[in-house]
Length: 138
Image (cartoon, rainbow, N blue to C red; front, side):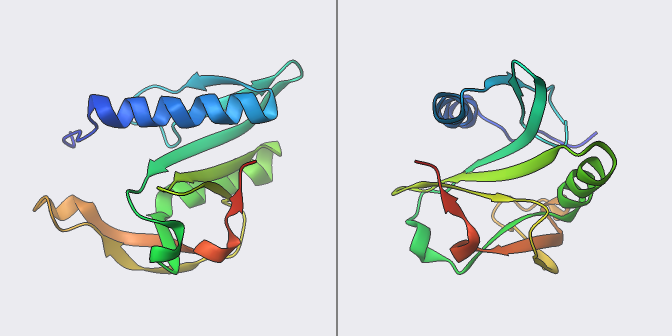
């Protein structure tokens, strides 16, 4: 089984973003179990509305032209969208804004990941979304 790197600080950052989404959209946010494809499920009084993946980046939004997410998450999101009509969104809390993009949007695939932990499982095929395509959550 893969080692988990998520810290208490990561979980608190996720919860803060989930609270902002809930306040902005009127959703009830349910944290999904560890190792799920997405971090949260968003519900309204009408039922399940969306799946949410959340990341915290300690840089300004303008620092990078693209943001990456594992290809498997995007494939999963697109299958759910196609078969169930439920969209998935990638939220990023930058130092200056909270932005999001629908995982159905166009993206590029390339090799990527992080190398600072020395874990070969951190590298793989990732989907790259243009940072300019991220909408700002008001």
